[in-house]
Image 1 (cartoon, rainbow, N blue to C red):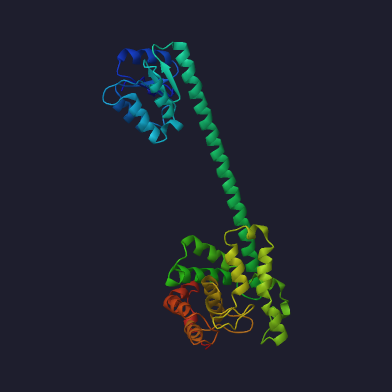
Image 2 (image 1 turned 45 degrees about the vertical axis):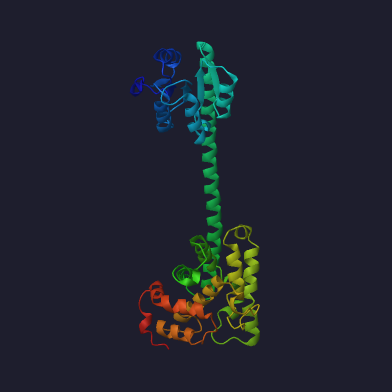
Length: 367
């Protein structure tokens, strides 16, 4: 490969592929003022060099009749890889037959220039196309940057929207005299159940991430429940419990009213979780009395996570139960009816769930 001294210049390289040294010298003389000239003596060498150094090349000038590999075969190989959409290729040939030109253009060559070349004409034809490709690359790069900026802005807006919902959910936990960590633990338990047990079969990692995100809004409807009921010390009356139960529908309605949430991929999970996390396997839950797998498995997982965390955490109406007691109460059906498959998965991973709480509850005397 012949080449000008590129270390001393910032000229973009132009590759000349021709088996005739005189033809290469003529073309090099035309372009060497503005380009670093690379040379190849046959089609095979030119093909290898064009492919290996694509990112650097500004253009390729290609003869037709050459040893080892002719110019049309080089064009075929470049065309198969979409090369000529990225780097302009010109055919320089003494064969001006219609068949050669038709083949060359069908393969994507930018121009066919016949020999003997007229210097100012070939220079202008090549430089016009090179400038066009350079402008297109600059435009493409600018569009790519703008697209990345828009994607980043969209991501930031989505994160802000979800962050606001998370902050709202946490505020509701504080309002009901519960730790703001409750929603984070529900998130952790739900992802653990769906991601580390057969319960989550058929769900992708992306699905599980979205469900975990959606789980934090399970009690968002409690914002509509009066403080006197939400924080009552003791058993609720029938009328009070009827009001408390409305938080499921209120939560689903609230999530539906937030445009950023409604357009988020997690919405379909969040809506169902808020609405149905108090349904029960035997149909005795609320608000719709769903039976069995009429409630989606991810909502069942959040429901169990909510019960477990409520049992092992101190609330305004109760002390915290120990982990062992809470596990026994759930398995014995003291906290409602759950899917047997869900209970089996929960029992298998429950010891690892205790890590979400730190130490101390095993010795809790309550229960």
